[in-house]
Length: 365
Image 1 (spheres, rainbow, N blue to C red):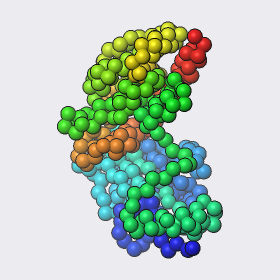
Image 2: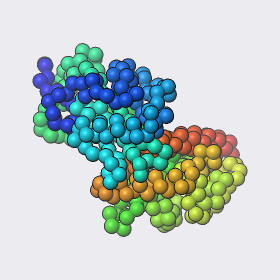
Image 3: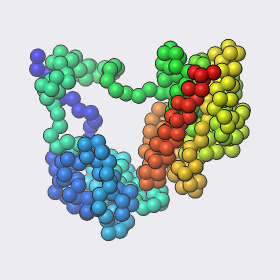
Image 4: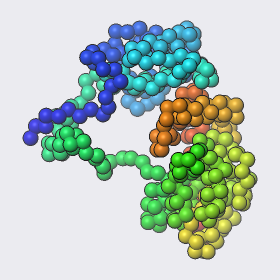
């Protein structure tokens, strides 16, 4: 069976017929050779003097610089105008796709703190077709025919198998059913800002109230209403134990100003407290708050400026629900020149270390 449909991941923002050469043949300053190199899948520019490329999944810096921030902004504006978008002081952020599908994210002052930033995720010039996937053995002709029918009928499709990710709530369920008592994440979900009007509350809180699992994290994502999140956990009977901290961490910041139920400086004592909590039979989980390592904490001024800008972006664009978090994280990554990524990695690794040691302590006593 030969399926006649061509499946596309996304429609381009630019409706023109010239789908070829969206990047080639145009002047993008010093990054032009990088964009024309088919072995490079992504180009990231954090200010005029810092350029990275991704090649075969590896991120590396390159010795490429713009003459000035003004030259970088010129390139950004040219790319934006090419797809009919604008970027200026009144609208300092753009998120769009080029005709060939390449994804572009850019931010300029006044939102950009350390100079303009630009990221281009390139699409292959010769993308795989359904027939290619069938030939590779990645897809059967029968499955392709089924997908064609679903596309034509506008059906939603749930795909199972392969790699993926789960929410904290889903991971707690899986851990509990597998008999795993401790797991680690960056930050839990919670009560979103404006929840009194939207009723937007993460299912993570409900899971913490249902499954007796200890979750090691750096508090809740700081884009949330942290005070109401802590209050909701208290209402649900979920204790928050601080590991070497007295206040609830704010993800990229070590403290939110919210006092914790109890501080523990010794993992054996923390393990005993968790064990005693479970012995009460309440059936609720435990939040183990472990702040981001001090060396990787975001500067407060940078953090507040980036967060306020991100929240304003979400509000002005009417973004709601599950789309809020990825848009805010992407915005803060752009504004801070990647500092949030370094902080994320550092806090996740440290949380994993603490969780591993805690699991050993729970198993040995």
